[in-house]
Every structure is written in C-alpha cells, then in structure tokens.
Image 1 (cartoon, rainbow, N blue to C red):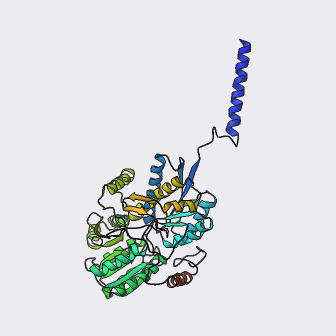
Image 2: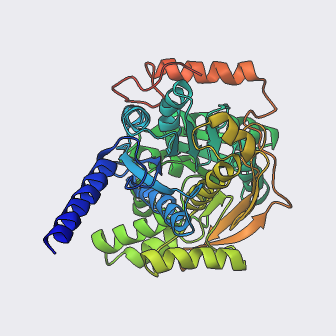
Length: 445
C-alpha cells in the first residue's frame, strides 16, 4: 500500500508540475485567454458637445454588445476602449494617438464636430488606422482612412436649403458655431440660396459652447428673415432657443431649419426648461420648438418594421423615454459594417483590405440599404422633418431614392474649396475652430 501511495504522490506531483509549466509557458495555448479585438470609441463625454455625443457612444456600445452576444468578430469578442474627447479637438487628437499606440486599436468609432475629425484625420492616416465617422458634415474631404457614414453636403445641406427656398421663403439668416462645419456649410448655402433666387440678409457665428445670443437675436428681429438656417452645435442650441423664446420670435412666422439638432437635443431643451423655467416650459415648447424643421437621413419616426425593432432595442436597454437619432443610427450601423467587412476579409488589422471589402457590402438598416461608395462615403436617403407635440419629427419630405455622395459640391472646383479651407485654417491660427488653444492638426487641408 505504501508503494502505491508513493507512486500516486509522484504522479500527482508530475501532473501539477506539468500544469504549472503549461500555464506559465509563453508558447502555451492550453490556459491562454481567448484573443480579443480592441476598438476605440472616441467621443465627447464632457464639455459642450456631450449633449449630442453621449448617446452616440450608447449606440456604438449597444452594437458591440449585440455582435459579441452573436459570437463576436472572427470568433473573437470585441473590447471597446472608450475615450473622452472633452469637446476639444486637441484632446481628440491626443486620445486617438493613445488609443492606437498604447491600447493597440486599429479602428476608432468616433468624432462629432468636423474640428475633432480633422484633428484625428492625420493620426489615423499616419498610423494607417480606420476612423468610422457617423455625422453629417461640410464635405471637402476624402480620406482613405475615414469611412464617412453621415451626409455629404448634397445629402443634407443643399437639399435642405433648396426645399426651404421652395417652401418657407427666400430671405435667410445664417447662424452657426464658429468652426469649420458651419463656416463651410454657410459658404455653400450662400451659393445655393443665390442660385434659387433667394437672399442672405444676415450671417453670424458664436464660439462652440457660446451662450451669448442677445445681439444676434436683435438683428434677426430687425431683419425679419423668412428662414433661420441653424448650424449651431452642442449645448449652445439651448441658449439659442432660449433667447428666441425670450424675444418671442415665433417659428410660425420665422421658420427655423436646423442641421445639427436631433430628437435628443430637443428632449434636453425641454428638460432644461422644465427645470429652470417650469411655468414657461410648455409655452416654450409649443411656441418656440414645435413646428421647427430639421433635415437628416434618419428620424425616429420612420414607419417600418426594421425601425420599430431598432428603436425597441434602445428603449429596452435605456428606458422608454430614450430618443434615437440620426448620428446614433449611423454609428450603430457603422459598427456592423466594420464587423461584416472584417468577417469577410478575416483580418482586423489590414485597413486597405477592410475598406476594399466595405465597397462590396450592402447592409439593411433602419434608414434604408447602406452601401459605401468608392469615395468612402455612404449613399443616403434625405428626409426633412417638422417637430410635433411629442418632440418627434414628422417626416414631410423624402428623396425619391438614396443619393450618391458628392463631398465636393459640383458648382465650384476643388481648388476653390481647398483655398476656402486653407483660409479658415490659417485665420484660426492653425486650428479648425475659433478659440482653439493647442495645435490640433498638421495641415490646412
């Protein structure tokens, strides 16, 4: 019996020694953790843009959760590394570089403002990484390392201005945040309004995060435009609409067409008034928000089985009062596009290979079939909505089909647009927004 016991102890010792060796061996796969794919999620969780960007993070993470539950990408779980751009282009640039060099990501889902995208652009190009950008923008750009999921000018801005000229009036007042998107958008709008026989009676800008609108509102009252074209971004919209309310400017007399206001900003404005002006909250909503217009490619009010299912996922996850917006839908769909392309090419690191596979994917989504054109922009259906009592946009006009993206408007040549960007970039001291303190980009393109 003693001999048997000794043999058993020896065998147990050998087994444990082998197990320990296998566990710590650098070449061992027996106890090694399953491989994962890290991705970056880079948006403003704080600062003036957080009002818009937090929900886009929700949409991105929800898509990743769903993909992981279905088995992941190439059989691997996707690990999101969330970074805060803090509504500052230079922070976006630093965080993009950190995500790539320290966290080891090859793809970033993120950015809202064009100033933040332009700050990240040389980073993803320099490291040959990918940026999936979910927001409509001013165009005049085409990078092999960026997938543009939002609208180009001919898929939002230009049709919105044309529709407003035909249906709301010919006299426009342009107001926007003082950075590259509103400045370029309004340059394009000036041209389109002129072609349509309209007139721009005023054009004003406030810094990102700016709250002072009294002087501008005074000009609007004096000039009496038919339409205010609003390209203000972030929580400045609360102050702008509050100033319109204080001045008793009626959107039934002066129409407001917004290009960066979604159902989420509307909900936040309503909550702000309920908290700070409870006695005036309903008056504010009914008299100064209801009836305003927005142009997007997706609205929560799209009546389709796929959209109802899509919205249901968010309300189940985040609550019944949760609102789903165009940038959220684009961000969510972008994660699935990336997943499909990586699964097809079986390589999460080869940027060129992933892009090439993206060109051959057609994916159903709540806004319609998504395809990526050869210029790395998505085809989009255009929709114009009017805000109703529930805080949703009723869709009152839809393009007959999806529109091929045209990042450079055809009515001026590329040298003209390049000169405009160069002028703005150097006017702001080598930045893409008024008031930026640190260097956020390496060129003026």
